[in-house]
Amino acid sequence: MLGSTRTTQCCIAGGGPAGLMLGYLLARAGVRVLVLEKHADFLRDFRGDTVHPSTMEVMSELGLIDRFLALPHNKVHDLSGQFGDTRITLADFTHLPVRAPYIAMMPQWDFLNFIAAEARRFPGFTLLMETEATSLIEKDGSVTGVSATSAQGEFAIKADLVVGADGRGSLLRAQSGLAVDDLGAPMDVLWFRLSRGAGDPVETMGRFDRGRVFVMLNRGDYWQLAYVIAKGSADRLRSEGLDAFRVAVGRAAPFVEDRLAEIGSWDDVRLLIVRVDRMPVWHRPGLLFIGDAAHAMSPVGGVGVNLAVQDAVAAANILAPAFRGGSLTDQTLRAVERRRKFPTRLTQALQVAIQNNVIAPALGAGHEESGKFEPPLFARLLARVPLLRRVPARLIGLGVRPEHVSALIRERAGVA
Image (cartoon, rainbow, N blue to C red; front, side, top):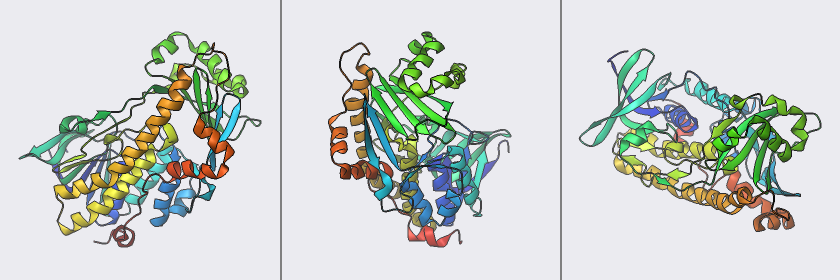
């Protein structure tokens, strides 16, 4: 492969939820697609493992839902928050008008392996593992392909369109010359897991106390846990020692105190540096960004994977007919950006509001301060008026302006 050149209609850099879903949808519509994934497999822990009703509705429209739900998963029908001593149900998904009115907790590698397997059924789809897009190839101001590196060496890919879906640390975005606006985040997150006991609670929930925010995701036989810390404080926390961290976890969730030894070293604790940013412009001639490469989301609401899938659906709906009709232009790419920019901006605005008005005050309130940590106004309203819980359920579960798969993609199923 060293020094060779491959040709395709669409080259997608990044085999995450946005890249793989877009590759699947375009291949299903009869477009030739090449997806590049730099890792040898999808087995990376503590990635976004929440599959929301909006994504499962897309699966239903594609006729994949039954096979998808045959994969191991846990169902989350509502989300709760505990503010000091007060527990409140914040979102109730059971009333959503969808095939699967709940969040499916599923390892992201299972989700990605499923999409990749379905995509390989179409002759126009190619997935190259251990292959990374390293630089853009340009001609007369337009992107015409990428240079890539694999275990076999370096090679070039010529494409009518390059899609950057290579995440929040996108190499292609850094080379594109396009700007990125940083919206800020007051926290980082330490992810780890502990086994679940027979007498443990079952809820997936967040706990907010003075000086501490703790999120518990029920994964069946274990807890996936997020210890939220003030931005940039990870080194200080590590310097205090692992025993001090175990004590802090025990204070946040006393029922796991008998299992704290399962945190054997700092290697068992994964640091997520939280970023919330977005590109004001998502495209250049021959180049389009989607998913985290276009807009890094806060972990608030766990919506990142599902926003990426929504980007992929919108992009495929607009790009597929342009590819098939030979009419792919900069206006086509602008239409994708225009379709997804408003939902992205509104979702990030809500995330930033929660970060600044709920999470930051909790992290900034010292343990020594007197008085209980009281629920914020919106949580008190949800406690008093249960019907209002459908509003956050819709925003989290379906998102702003949920996308639906076009008839062209649903019906063609890869027919040339």
